[in-house]
Amino acid sequence: MNAFELAGKQLGLNESDQKAALQDYLVTGGQNLDPATTAWCAAFVNATLAQSGGQGTGKLNARSYLDWGQAVDKPQQGDIAVFSRGDPNGWQGHVGFFEGYNPDGTIRVLGGNQGDSVSVASFSPDSLLGFRRDGNALANAYTPDSQGQDPQTGQPANAFAPQNALAGYPNAAQQQAWEQSMTYTPLRRSRPTNALSAPIPLV
Image (tube, rainbow, N blue to C red; front, side, top):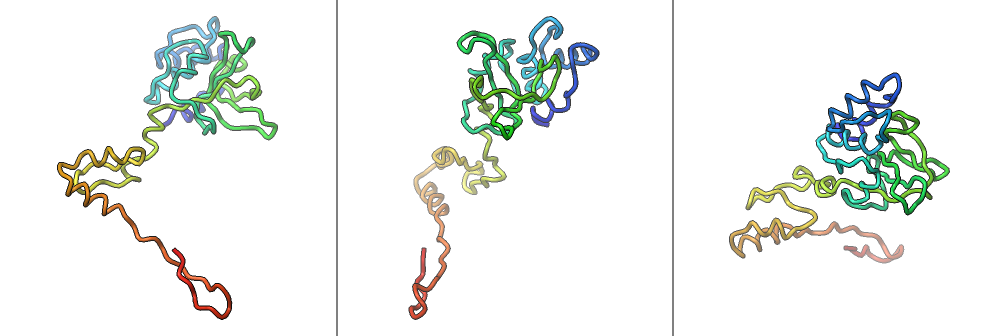
């Protein structure tokens, strides 16, 4: 289960009548605090990432996530969204998981401490400080299953850095054999240039 899915399962937890369950969730994720007295949006993200196999910033200030992962311009569901709160140049902020855009352009966020609970709330894009994505998620965007395996080295191909796959070859001959195996013959199709002419092959 990824972090976004896990966060969704906590919808409705709040700091009043479900405070014990909420606090247990945060503590399980390494965030030992009282959500009734401490702003806990970043703690919720930290705890959720920790319990889904990831790692957050470990800090309680939302803007700490501006230094986490990698910045992205086109967010995907589950990316981290960071917003200002109050002074745009100040230290306060809010952080949660990007869910999507509303028709009016506002940003839907699945997060904690939104109305004192785990909920989905909408935020103005004017207060957006940035979207962040787990660096490991970017690095693992291509898996060995989708890339295939190099028959010479037994290593998975690396779509981001092909030279990494070549580095495993002990000699130039094997490297050349691999490079030749990566060539392909493009599909050819035909279409007539006019009604009287013969088909002309197109590459």
